[in-house]
Length: 277
Image (cartoon, rainbow, N blue to C red; front, side, top):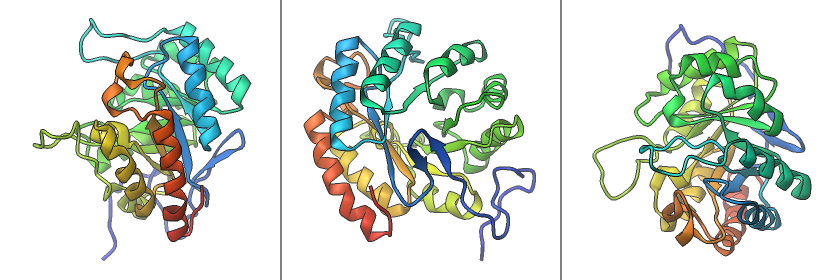
């Protein structure tokens, strides 16, 4: 029996015989044969930190660079990001490494400036139902990486994608990043069943965030490999030159040497399911 979603979800739903959507970002393609790997620190903390991370992930084979300039934090006392200065540092890293930049946008009024510096606009889990923001990025000229809300159902998540698509932006990438459950040992519960399920009901590419999905460095590598085996079109992995001193998410960030090992281990997994890195 085939899976069915609400008939009210029209643009994000897969119609009979519909091909997978390919999202092109510079030389990278998400949704094709190659598994895209987006990597970098949770936050842009300084030019030196970001450039070191960017060079390391580029050398290891990453497709794109991630890094937060605007950071939504649970408490107002936590590091909120460098803002526009962080965007400028990300642009410098792109200039040197050639890696397209993925960074979060948090408010409609920030979209224009983030779009000026970034290649992909990320909508975080806390903003997946921020409808004014979704409408605004639907009018943007850059692809949107839409993270799943921490308590969102698949249909609620696809409904958020519908807002972006309805606004005229066809380049939406879904990102599974874990959902809340009753478990206490991991930060979230990474729902890898969402990957093949989405492939059946939607044409949009799907990437997986094993860093937020687990919150534990030692689990990032095995869950990355599991995500690729499940059919993910890409990964978004946090990598920091010195996680012990990270201003956010150090406990789930790989060291550059660990990321390099992961990239080597992902190749055989990708080939086993007819993909490549």
